[in-house]
Image 1 (cartoon, one colour):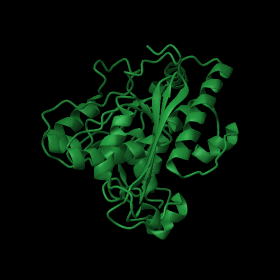
Image 2: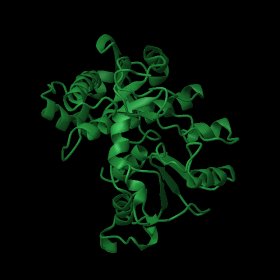
Image 3: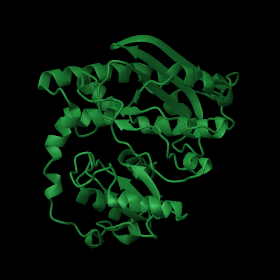
Image 4: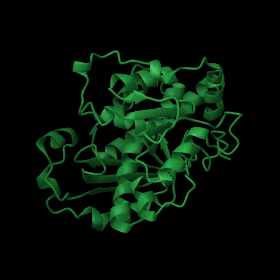
Length: 341
């Protein structure tokens, strides 16, 4: 038990799917990816990547960085530019300040990933929107080594949303709120430093408001959500005219089901978001379902083994080879926001 946050960082949201999946299938669907935790531990490694784009499947890592923290203090750091197989676009260079010339003599990801993973070790990794970084690391581990990246991770966005009320929770917004310097922003090591400082500020905020356990605080704030009147997902219609919906969005035309309590939105608001993207809300998982989005089932008394009936049904269909995918809440938002770029 972590005495500082009152939450066992070996626990969290366990989406370890049972079933006789092949190793190839487990890697492709990131089934063995670590768990998303909501706590503020004393020991961790902050990670940040710069990449050529947003897709772990299509884009490449061009910078790796990490800061190892012990008892709240920086112990060591790591930074390495990486030469991608494809060139860096002018747009990406304008965002990251990394040019093709800077990586011309840099090693490939195949040459440095093992060293980077060795620096991280078995630590819980921390980052801002860290699911993005974890997915890139996972997919590169899978393609290079044939192994999963299984470290649990903490997204400071999720933690901040429990502690401060802001219109937006970008790293720039939180740095401005807490007075954290943004010098060299968008370079990986500088972003690691900012995120580490943000963790310190969030710990101070916990002490200020007397919040000793983030998970219990979340439970208290959401304990009444299970008493909602049933929402018929099929009745939620798009608020966007059909001709204005982006038909190239990855969710357009897909069938989506939610299970568990969401952190970022109430269930109905999330369903409305789905409808506005031209996707189709479903009440239950069927053989035609494309995505099951997992909320938090930890505090539902009717669930005995951590899995809802919807999740179990989805896993059954996955074993039968249907096209359904199971994703956590943050991955769902990553997919929603992917259409904005």
